[in-house]
Image (cartoon, rainbow, N blue to C red):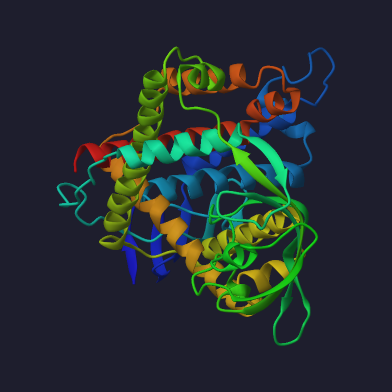
Length: 432
């Protein structure tokens, strides 16, 4: 179906994310494009009696190769009319168009087709008064006491003992984990001279309990099963044998919880000041988490209630970007790509499928937030941007590489985009 948009251009919808523009230039536009081409090319033309590019247009035209002039005129007029048609139709192209010249008689006639992928229509769902409730924040005395106890343990005196280990003791151990079925070593499940406080729940359930009663130089095999919700997918519910050796048992003598202790751990005069600071920090941490959860819940509900057709090309590019990110993360953590996939319980095919879904969510979220910003006239002004970029430059004043990154135009645009997202999310929170 063809929809007339101007006397020069028709829009043909190929599908919801691809269109073809049928464009025709008029005589005035061709003449203007030709004049621009002469002016551009004439800069390099030298004629007797005139400075470069300063001769009359009629003389410059005669001195320019006709084919070169025709090609330059064509490029100028095609670019202009394509952009005019895009703006007239309020299209959002995501790639360079495929241009097909249908007719071109230099300076008198031009018709061409421009096929391009676009973002489909964005249909916003409800985004105000969504009924999402932010959870209240409370900090208990028990939580404060737990932090104080950890501080005491960090500053505890360690006295090596010959007796059997008990809860609250530190044991220094070597350990290696093996698959209970194959007896193969488990990657990442080993350590040397590892200090472990029994009862700290630092290891999977059963490991610390298995070391209770051990003495220095004693070796033990501890048979366990990894939790079903363990963070590494390949280890979930896996049966494992840990071969351990206790190298020493240390009794922890905790410092007294008094004003002297408070002065030792920070700028506090009394233990009550320390307790207040701990409570304030716990409250801030919880508030930050609750706000983050609240923001995510709002954005998720808005996105799920809205719709947009995502171009396949855009989804492919974002999927490739996600894979690049994950490969870099794997390498940073010392894992091969296969080891990373195994830890996540994935193979190449399932990873690709998961990445594609993540890509669609990312793209849709960005487009929906962008539509909210457009609907509510939300923007980032120069003062807001300059404040943020200057703060970052000050923060990394001694890092030359970071300074170069912050001066990179692409990174600056990324920063503006992030600020825009943050401001839009803040708006959504204010409306809910």
